[in-house]
Amino acid sequence: MAKRSFRQPAPVPFPRSDEKGRPGPLGARAGLIFSVYDWGMPQSSPQSLPNSLFPSRDAAAATPAPAVRGAFLLVTCQGGAEASLCGRQEAVLPAVSKAAWRRGMVTFRLGDFDPPDDFFPDLIYARAVVRSLGQVSGASDHERVAAVRTLVTHTAWDTIHVWHRDRRLESQTDSPVDPLAVRALLLESYGKPASLPQAARPGDLVLNCLIDAADRWWVGWHRAHTPTSCQPGGMHQTELPGDKVSRAWLKLDEAIATFGVDLRPGQRAVELGASPGGACQRLLEAGLTVVGIDPALVDDRVAAQPGFEQWRMRARDVKVKNFRSFDWIVADMNIDPRSTLESIGRIVTAAGVKPAGIIATLKLPDWSRAKELPGWLDQFRAWGFSPRARQVSTGGREICVVAIKSRRK
Image (cartoon, rainbow, N blue to C red; front, side, top):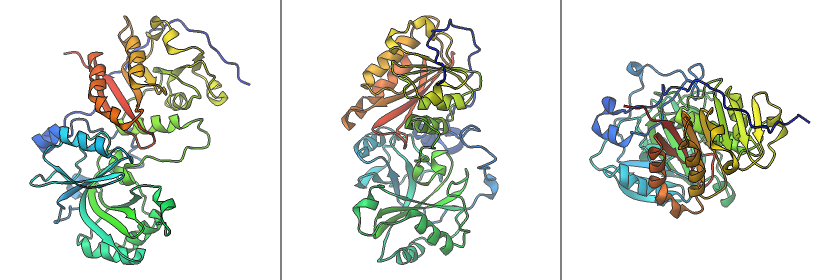
């Protein structure tokens, strides 16, 4: 068994990371409405969307959008988050109005508002945001594909996304629908190769097919732009790689990709409530030196990694001076959000503690607590950080907050 080290090291000076790569306002590109509604939209970064895998398309050569744009937005979310999604819509996107909704999906009537092709408003709870063109139904997949071709007159698509409104549908219906099989039929119908990658490239025009039930699909489109909008249904990979110790690895991996978190080799990170060590494992893979704080032991596969150290105690028992050398504070503790914020606040408000950023998961005991999120984000601002929030697809009933140290004016 690898030898574990629980000694508290003396703080060492380390250059702080700067804030390059943070997403900026987008209003200059799309006008006032886009600037107001999309202020928090995460941008792609070399870390989260490697150019070698997803080269951006030349804007001048972009596939033209459909002439029939659709009068509704279709927005998907985690089942149960519909009310929170609508509450956020009312706050940041008042120009639209709620129309139909089902578990895991809400449609919004656009009215006179015609957003940009790659519109992805900061709705926090949204996974996919597409322009809805309507529904199709039929007795078989082939009939429904034919109905799609009748409904959608536009034929030039760069790729096609197909996903379930609710993955539990496969166990709730007598005739489960395979999204990959549906996609294969649609690709064939539109003359696309079966080998076409599921992930879109930034700038791609995407045909969307949301499987609502065994005999009913919603159809729409969007232009891929953010890392989230490049994935079918805005879903990050769902299968935990076999060499990872917990789903905390997967959640942090999605947060890094979604927010374009600028982790740099050689930086130092500390995780509060680290066991069994999934998030620490992801940080180590990014080249950081990591300290995990938890009375419970982390997995041996993490403990044996060079650059890792565990402090076997509760975070509140660590002297605040020992946090002075860290660039990142990470927290994913199974406690009330207020307690998580108290733990973080104790650290980042202490003299000499100057992290470049915070990555925090705020657990929601029930969905009604989501209404407290604006106040929680104000806490980060009061500490001198600029927070962005999202309910990542790999997490449960929780909100991921990435907060970057604000620039001094």
